[in-house]
Figure 1: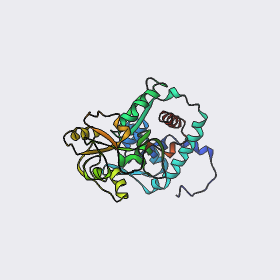
Figure 2: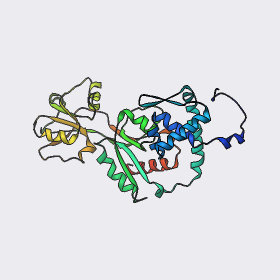
Figure 3: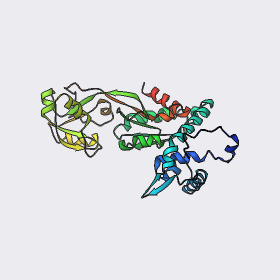
Figure 4: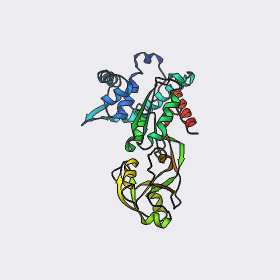
Length: 305
């Protein structure tokens, strides 16, 4: 049967035999490809999730998901009905939630995925601000996994991602919180474009490979620099700078105030005009009208206004 395009009048009596609570589980398993992960998101046991999935299978007369290796892969019927079920649940959610008055003290938790180096810039401010509403709020700072940003937001594994601005597709919303610029840290006492490009540089990135954003900006101007060392943290890079008098470290200005800069190191503006760095919060568009989520967004915007 074509569940999407089959037209019929609504039989209200049929809803007596339909358990609508089974359908959020369907969405969670479809998106996570895992019963255990779906159960975690819905705050139920894996046994309860498995039992509920069996009931839904009987109701829809289809396997819905088939285990392939470690993942639960959707059947053709699941692929077909997933968009309609998700739209229906979002509609029900948006109808119900706007008529509820959201109380700020009702915020019980805040989960944010953020890069290690950005965490000191944002998390203390978030904690101080939101504890005004509920002193017992549970805060979670989760290590940013850029490969899974869209999946984590869609599955509500995190409330927000805070990271540098990038295009993540039409389903992900972004709002700028901080505009920053690059500066240079070095033992050298003078700075010019020639000195900057001729000196050895330390690059900082949590990725194993890939071009750093500052090098991407330089390449657009047909310029390049020599990176002799690549490490994961700015604090490590600063220690290494002490050993190399001519070496340079390029980093966002806002991060400098959260690091221990030795008196032997000097801070300069980058002698090449580079674009500003935009950092902000990402969230999934499905939560755009969610009262709790909208409150959190508005408050986070206030913090960095």
